Length: 295
Image 1: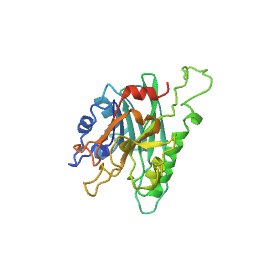
Image 2 (image 1 turned 180 degrees about the horizontal axis):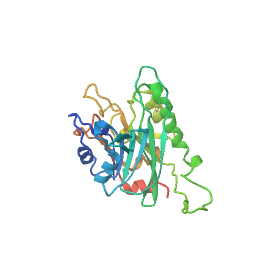
Image 3 (image 1 turned 90 degrees about the vertical axis):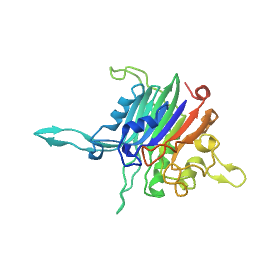
Image 4 (image 1 turned 120 degrees about the horizontal axis):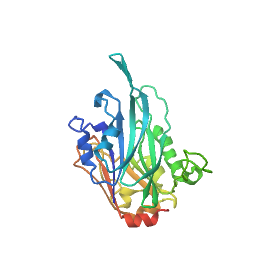
């Protein structure tokens, strides 16, 4: 079983060319996919609904799109109102059913003299043949640690709040709309995406746990692990944006620590040209993962 996370920079590649076909080729073969910087309704990408266009090119996948930005992009043409939305956000595609999803708008602080965006976290629940996993695609703020740390806190709250929040709906089923039992809300979770921090940052320590002089990384039993390190890679290795020597690993996958025994390997596709970022890939032992997940 393979996962991939990719900030596609709205399909603008290293050659400055916009090419969704190239993006789809670069994520081919993945079973669960987390994308960031997917957009709709903008002139620079021909007003294409990129989420729909990607989904149409991958017809065997379930999918959901969660924008952080949603603004009017309508205009009058020849006396007719062309209705469209300008959106920018995250996407999940899955070979397995996406039984529910929630789009969380992350904390944002208005700033003077600095351009930044409303960021979001798309939380989905995937049904892996009767076992369930929360699989999230997210994009944290690019400005500074103090704008990201409240967003990291939201991630931690989501990690620990599954049982208290419950499923998308709950209680007695008594209407035609909610004519099925509520979908599950599992504790196990995976966060994938462009997090805009590296392994030396305070944000990283908040998620992965602090370092102890005598015991190494102190990961809570109900905490998260950096899948890159858990799969045997060196903490300070890897570049997902920028050139070697100046590049950084800012695209991450953090997973519930109890899932790490099923992780086989993680790597960075250094050959991808479809964005200013490089995709991160993970391979899992599906049978082991299913054993570790609740029904």
